[in-house]
Length: 198
Image (cartoon, rainbow, N blue to C red; front, side):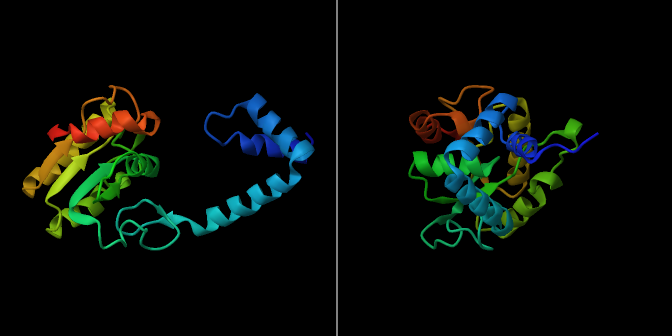
């Protein structure tokens, strides 16, 4: 069987993006090759550089080009408040939508025992180390309102409770089963302001 052509390899590679099926990938590939080769070259250059240079912040675990992200390095952030989110996209959404001045912790997912994702896989050992430092006085649980997100929030709440850390949970306006990345800014701001004791 002959190996796929370079065009087929490009189309196949573009399908790794979320929401991109065979037809969309084919349209993208043809667009780059027929109408925007300079854009394709720039995309290739930036993508290669990003894959090599972007890692995770050693403090909050978000995506970062340096060991410490710009938010963790900012001395004006309030280290006593820690907002816990599932993904860097959720963190970015909160930063864009509201004037939150505390710090973050990015889990990189949620607890899902059936998928082999336990506390260690989402960095809860690192989170417990943050709690042990004694600086955090309140955590704001901003996990997605899904079954897995709620289970993760409950687990983190129990961790915080043993250390006498106040726990709040964003609530109003975020639909059950929804994901923060897709919630509009006004709804998210309302939910954040209306957080309640967990």
